[in-house]
Image 1 (tube, helix red, strand yellow):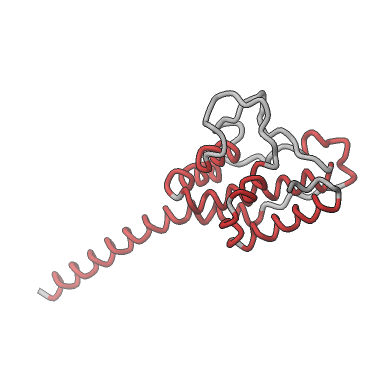
Image 2: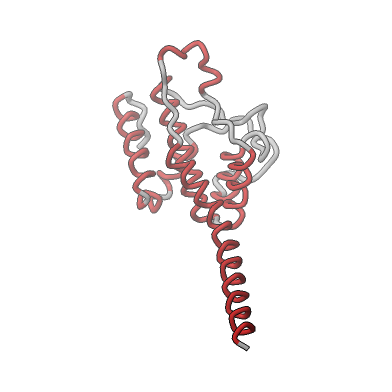
Amino acid sequence: MRLLSLYCTLTILIISCSTTKVVNTENNDLEKFRLFAINYNPKYDENEREKIFDLIKLPQIDSNLRRSIIISCQEYSKQSLEYLTLVLLKHYNYHFECCKQSYNLAIKLKITEQETLIPYYFIKISKIYPQQDFYEFVSSSIGYDFVCDNKYLLKNKDIKHIYTKIKYNLKIYGKETP
């Protein structure tokens, strides 16, 4: 009888741990995406100026992170929108620090999940543009422009920090929009 009771207790404990692990796996994808967005830090190096066209592209994303970003965007769109915005703000800030302008994020006039994951889900979740197959030009300032129209995003301290930095740089170079 005691052995049966111990067996039942162990079985319940194992099932509880298994269930908890599944929940953590789902949140793990969002956490991976969050950490990527926070740690993404493109830096301009004057010595790499000859590789400027490679430097203006969004970062390559490995398959595991890509999977986590896709799952996060599909299941946690509100939080994912903040992380997408943060990455795009950082990328635009980098473009501005490097070259004092924005660049086109569309590759071959397309924004696709395969080639341009971050802008693809940003457009899909934010609805800043109608979702389509063809984009003539998608400015790297898209995240900044979105925050300008959606100030609630400034509650996120990371977004606020980069946004403020961009706004300051735009003002210094006389490119600030009203």
